[in-house]
Image 1: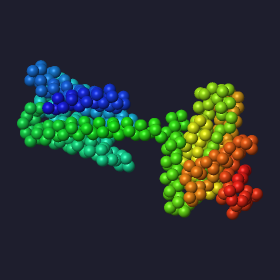
Image 2: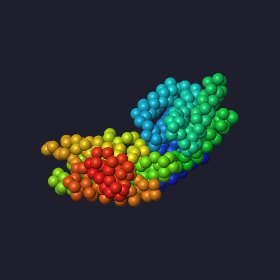
Image 3: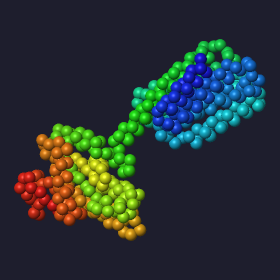
Image 4: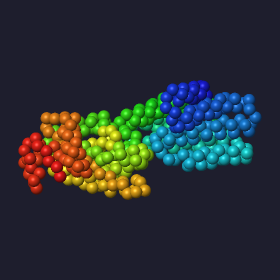
Length: 391
């Protein structure tokens, strides 16, 4: 049952690989289940094999399968433990080979293998359960059975070390617990890893749908969704919310002159520099091409204009090393503060109008759609409601 079950799961995962995402962790897990199935099949054939092969082949394959599954968990969860796990596998295989060559008794070999499998299952449980901040139900569903199997094999080793005569075929309550646990682990691990892989695929698809691959920023659709949530929160708290639309000046000419590769590099440098200027809770997204939007929670129009000025000066120094000749990047920025009754889209239109005015007035400047400036009127910025102002 264990042999057939593991091989069937390997076939199912191979089909998932064929029709779904070709993820490396799934490949490793699929091969590990196939090897585990062959290992149990070799245990079943053990009376038909020579004594040395009957001990080395099934036990060696079982170690390889357990390490392979643990490596697949590390790969799926992003942990960089693979080299250490490979070293652990080599050490375990050498211990097994040494024990077989020294012709230790079957009960002693059972104790050694029980300890090895207990360590490997315990390590898998630790990998799945170690990060409490990211612990979710699915990881608990997979990790806890691995922990229980580790405890069962430790009990098996304890029984064998204290005078028990355990071998693979010895009938006993401990053996029954181990085999039933192994079958439970087969089902839970199989379904669990399949769901874990599905979740990972869904996260990747969501990232592709919401993230700009060149800059790493969220795209226009995701920005509008996040901005609407921020608007609703600002409305509940009574705090202001400002919006900037940023456009890199003459970027098309730069692309035509230097090529798209350097243009992409300039965009990435601009985004990196801008990220150092903005606050951690500010939201920046790429609207398309060389145009970006920035949402500034808890920020009124005058403070937003100050932030835009800092961003403009930062951009000028951001791309000096993009080409062999010095390249000074300039940006035009339109700023607007959200009104109580308007949506983010409506405020974005006002900020975009201010941006176009900045371009008409010579570029490399900040303009604001100034419905909020009349009450302040500092340094000539005041205007009648609905008027506009610039820096």
